[in-house]
Image 1 (spheres, rainbow, N blue to C red):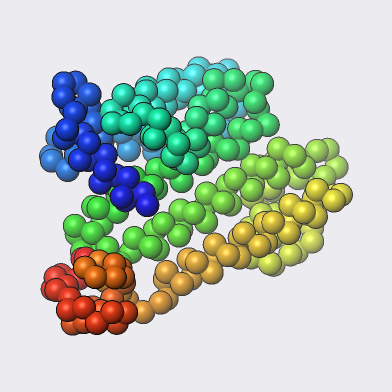
Image 2: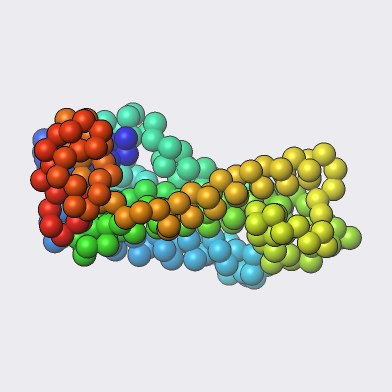
Length: 269
């Protein structure tokens, strides 16, 4: 679905005229200039994610608000440019990655009012993983089989940080056994892995429900990562008849419909 939307945007960018067409081509194009621009934007995204991860450490410093508003400015500029580059702004606005970015932007613009929602900022890592830039680079170098592993790992890390932020925000109180953010991360990892040392527990019904959700979601993501790591190697190649994506590296016919395939020797799909 996301890939189809990207292909549609790429076609739309070609059909546009003027500065919007140029901006759209920078965001979805595949020429050298567009790739450089996309890597520059991705580098800024990585800086923003690093800021989110360091939030618990620097949030009490005098420079925190200045850094917060600077990051908000960068994210607002990126969102505005993407909106102007979109062929259909309303369709673009309905995308989940855009909703996530808008929530993140709100927490940045009102850090004192929405302090309890600050942990949602790490969702920016998930939106970054939805960009095809990184995975296209892997595929072009013959490492396309690692794409599923990378996506599964990012989903797991994002989940761990979101749950950690929620646990720290809601349950870290004097006498709770959590002295800092690292304790919340320790609890989350222990719960997700079902280790359950029991030295840190969450009180009340909300605490029990949080633990249940953490275990269910965490185990599901761990299983997904394990499947991506250890399942038999497959190449990515769309069957022209039934659109089956995964095939054996030496497959001659599609195992689903029997269509004759022409998988490139490189195995990159």
